[in-house]
Amino acid sequence: MNRRTLLENPVSPSSCTRPVELYVYIDPLCGDCWSLQPLLRKLQVEYDRYFTLRIALRTSLPKLNFQCSQKNIDELACEKTHPAYPSIAVKTAEFQGKRAGFRFLSKMLEYSFLKSRNVSSFSVLVEIAGKLNLDVDEFIHDFSSKNVLRSLQVDLYMAQEMEVDKAPTFVFFNENIEDEGLKVSGLYDYEVYEQILGELVGGPIHPDIPPPLEDLFQRFDTLSTKEIANIYNITEKSAERELKKRLLQQHVERISFQDVTLWRKKQA
View 1 (cartoon, rainbow, N blue to C red):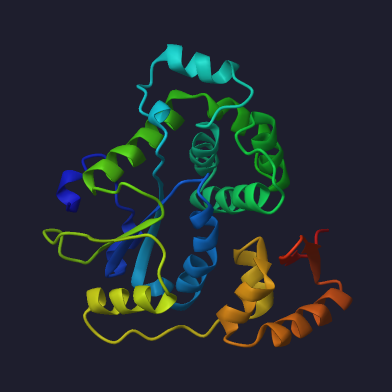
View 2: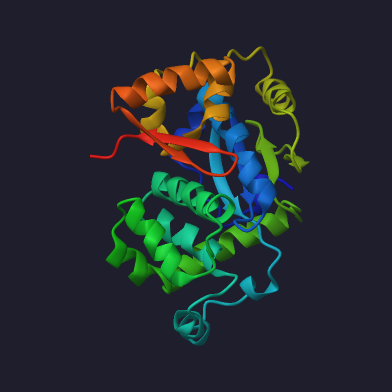
């Protein structure tokens, strides 16, 4: 399992300036992947300068192992719901930019695990694209394109080459292209990933100071009270107090669910 075997895995120029490549394999329908999101965000905030992140899709659905034939594309386009749709939608959003793909995945997990919406429904996925101010017409057009399906197949191919058989899974690579990747399947405490990152960097790593809260909301569309507390290493009570101040100043909005409170930048 090394990068020489990944024939269709282009590396962005920016990855050359960071000593570690991190692939995170996610199944959009997996509950553990929803739990993974706060951990991954904290890792980005604190250690972003040490690694290049790529989100890849790993699904257990055998129906995703199709070829990019026009027949299969036409069959998918005729369906109103399909278990493959969430994975296809993430790749479709990525065609409007890497950040658009991240944001779409985050919002889709929110819809699925907090709002209990059916993200296997095409209409729900289009709704999410609209909520994120993506180009909805382009999203609908790209959804059944060969290029999107080919992009998804690349992820599935990489998962096979890296011997990833479940989601979530982290695969770390250091600067030596000949070295095997370090695979971590399942979820562990945050400190485990910190330790691995430090070992692959080959020296001490130092967390960045978290940005102001306003900047954090520019980076992530919605954040829970617990996430914010963890990022700033404060209690949830302190985090909620700061957020309520900004709520009164109309800088943020609160979205309440049964046992989770999400916050986002105040919409214009």
